Amino acid sequence: MKEKAGRTIEKIYPTRDIENQLGYNKGDIVTVKVREQKEVWWVTAVYMGVEGSGNQEDNRKLFEAMLEIKEKFGRDKWVIMGDMNGHIGLMEERVNRNRELLLDFAERSDCRIKNWELENPTTWRDRNNESAIDYILVNESVDRQGCRIWKNEDVDISDHSMIGITCGKHREENNAKKVIWKEKWDVKNANWIEYFRGMENTMPGDTEGIGSTVSE
View 1 (cartoon, rainbow, N blue to C red):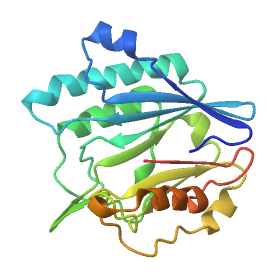
View 2 (view 1 turned 60 degrees about the horizontal axis):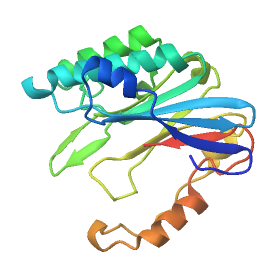
View 3 (view 1 turned 90 degrees about the horizontal axis):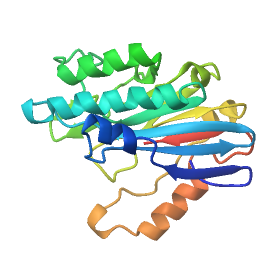
View 4 (view 1 turned 180 degrees about the vertical axis):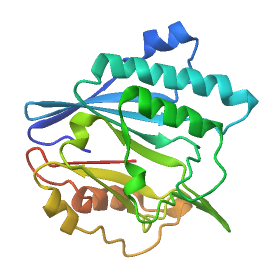
């Protein structure tokens, strides 16, 4: 999502006091406030560490911080997205502890995990391994707008696939748009200026009014 006429994006730190209170200060969570015409959206990006004894307590505190954010801003439109390293059974793989945290958070925050709507839920590939570990969740205010989750595997800048949601009155127009990438990107030697210029020109969501696209 980018700033444009009628839309402003403000980076905020609503969790600093929360993190200090919980003893969590790893910086793996950030929330931005987006004003779209007369509407207010909150977008939270989060990274949850790979499960293990070293990350288990940090991950729990991370989700506690997200629940605090929900109490502050959850009545507005709220989108949560990120690499959560959780296996919730989308690909019939072995579930893990992060799965329990993620599902518990979704239930307690009344948020919907949009990944269930993907025909192919894979979001990460490495050699012969693949998994679904990146997620997008939305609260009821967002889900009522009929938002559609999408995935683009042609953006070859990471071992993760790009995922996002498209919402609002221009949804059908956005559905018809396709991101065309003429070549695979070599991350080490990529022409990043042209890359970001291409994103500005072709990313879904380049519409006016309420039509909005958010991607991770």
